[in-house]
Amino acid sequence: MNLEKSTKTIAVLEIITAIGLILFWILFFTVGLAPADPPVGYFEYEHSFPLPDIILSLTLLAAGYFLLKKKGIGKSLSLVCAGGLLFLGILDFSFNIQNGVYAVSTMDLITNGFINIWCVLFGLFIIRRLQHR
Picture 1 (tube, rainbow, N blue to C red):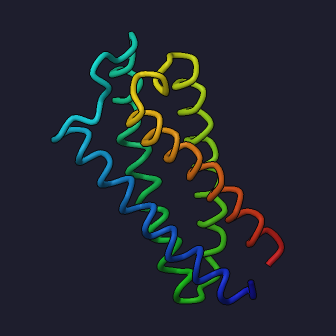
Picture 2: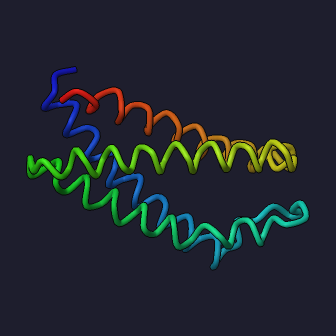
């Protein structure tokens, strides 16, 4: 994948990821995405994430925008977001595996598993593609 195509792909995926994070929290607080029988501390844990996730979402939107406009700050912001995505994905995985969230239901496994894997793999992809460019 050439540099320009790779950068555009990252930008589009950053924007989609930001929108996905925002939609997740809207659905979490309106529809109720919590497991039917959540582990102790689940809501306290989850309620600590909206502010950092909103900041990450806004930064992902800015990074995507600036990458599409070919502004140098887009790369820097993208690398910052990559670190945030890795941290988010690994922290969530750690909580979910220690507290049996993946075992609550197939839907929880698929939803949480996808989010955790996406955050880690997309964060690594951003770093790999942008680190020396």
